[in-house]
Length: 95
Image 1 (cartoon, one colour):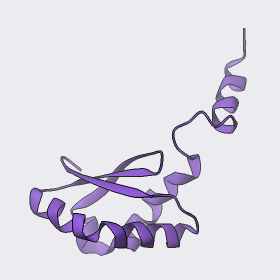
Image 2 (cartoon, one colour):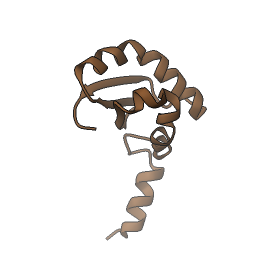
Image 3 (cartoon, rainbow, N blue to C red):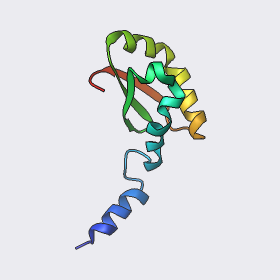
């Protein structure tokens, strides 16, 4: 039997997670990167393999943010100092 601590440590260092644990910084800088107007209507919900999922409040914001996707992605990556996100997908849902 393998101790649970060894299993967890291996998950974080073995590269088997579909995300980098440092990617949680996206949630810390989101409001600053997108500004208060967008952050009131859109929140990151998950990141997996550099694909960020963002939940928006309604279809109007969905359409608007699709046009801003590359700008938001570039600002996030610049703020975090590395390429964290290579694609942002938006969907309507509860934030």
